[in-house]
Image 1 (cartoon, one colour):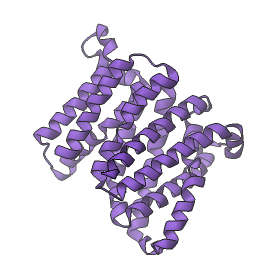
Image 2: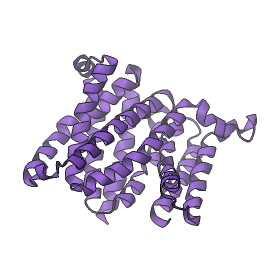
Image 3: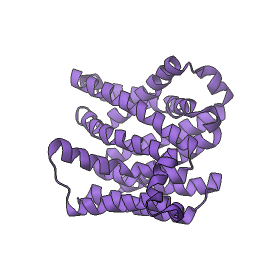
Length: 294
């Protein structure tokens, strides 16, 4: 059951990375926050990729199918990360990150629309718990009307941006699984995250004219902390993936939404901590039901 420890640690480190990114770099804007989140992991992850490349004769994995899957996955992941960073830049962690729990909900609905898969009773229960949790996050708005907490998702822009992220993750989770099947879990994670850490900053430099070197020099501590904790997440993610099925690992990794609420209170003294922690717990239970019991 060692995978449980690694999956929970992955959830903790991704939440810690987000909190540190908001604390040290939100003043720089979401584009540079995205650079820090990706580029900062490179010195930690690239050596692992090289080691696995030599050890596993991994050049055999680089088929046309594998490369096309990776290319599509990269474009979606970069888009999702930009929305992700924008979300935590503009809103409290406890009011935005729990909306990542909607990823399995989107997967269920795309499965219904594309494949005709029916939603089971347990799956519907999980969806209801996640939706109710989303309602609770903005419950203090209820004095404006019964539907006001739902309207708060759009008014609190961070939650809306994280909903978009969750939708894209619903697609990338499927593509990521395909990448794993076309190669090897450990190798694919090391290769993919290393590639992401290089491609994303270069693309943002072209699109947004980001002066990467000056940004890193000015914010070396923040980039190191964000990149280091994100790399630790990747290590734990890879180790957990090598020990258990993807769906189980990703479900438990979503403990990140609980850690995010607690870290939001610790770092930023965010309000309604008890209510939002309860909401995040309901959403996490919904994720577990969908992933493990549907």
